[in-house]
Image (cartoon, rainbow, N blue to C red; front, top):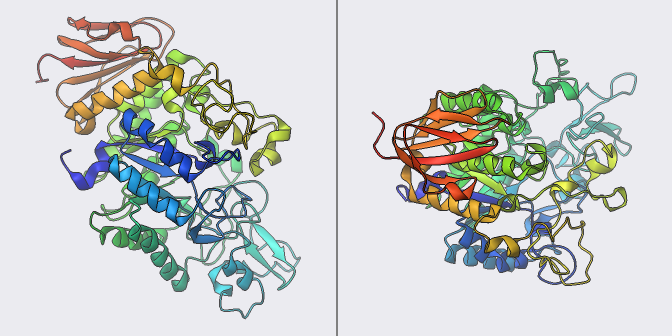
Length: 532
């Protein structure tokens, strides 16, 4: 590796949803010891770092994203000693561990909020966002929650509304308060001192709100479709310029460690310039998730536009990051690829061959599909509220390790917290020794990326290609070509050799002047000579 402190640039990272990864004690819920037990799978795959969804103490109104103790571990998941053991075991395999940080809001059961709501005079009152009703008793402004309905709940004890941009059980912290900022400095250092390599920061763009609590303007026809869904632009309850002061402060804390810790932001914004602003001048986030790609159509033109705009906009000292799905988004083999395994192979090749860091979501390496979760088994509060339109349980179901009872996730006969998908069709054990499996393709792509510097750090150059074919060069000697259409296509290039094709029988095939690709086929080609 060229830059040990920049391991996250060249590496492949992997998101673990702890409740669904591996259950070590047979209670049907995944846990930290289960993650330790499966680290060899991640090392074999070639993973350089893992990000764990929240492991801190929570009443689980939103499954860990309502935090009641930022420096304790949810008992069903393990203990602080288990965290230490995980960090140590991962380090033995050269895998870094990142945790989730939720700074925008706490649980309604957090001791801070219990104090804050007890009276208007309580010292913790100013740790949260409180406001008087309008003269008619209605909420202070028109802000709408990301989970539906107003962002305000009236508290009968003190006669004021408190702000919650998500569930009413998730009151928003007041980041104008210096005591809140100081407390989070302490929280970061608590985990960094234990060896945590960094944080993925939840809804980082929303942390600071408008001090005057002004109404948001309505969405317009020109806004991204995700903005139009909410009916208003998030001008005053998110994306405030002052949030960059907070991030720079966190970055200074992260940079004070040796090696430096990293900050990865959930920047759920819908234009490239806003997303890129969270990198600052190389003094804010190390990585800002690109939701424009996540929400893109899976076709050559749409994807190419997102990538070209991102590569052009990200500052030279910063680094793009890509992912195909996460705990809040349907899995890419379902969402992008409609369950078609050939399309899923193209999507995986794209992610692992773009310029920047890639995050895989657990199960991506298998081509795992969303699982149909019946209404009576729903656990996601959003899914319960919006059923059957939308929910997040389908992408959070247990990892299928084997086809046996319990799927290698839990003990045979134990009912998992969410139902299994079809483990007989998709599981690690069956795919591991199949050279044509999605798992083998994933491991080989990661291995090629590790072996070829151009795939890790080479510049991105768009190549001319037919309409459904998206082709680009990485560095001087690598060409990536994806046919994202139903008809055969051809791309011109100098002589070379196919290193990996999504149809594995073509691996090693010679290329003489052009490469023909069938429908939904992708290839990575090593050119005989460097591009001039």
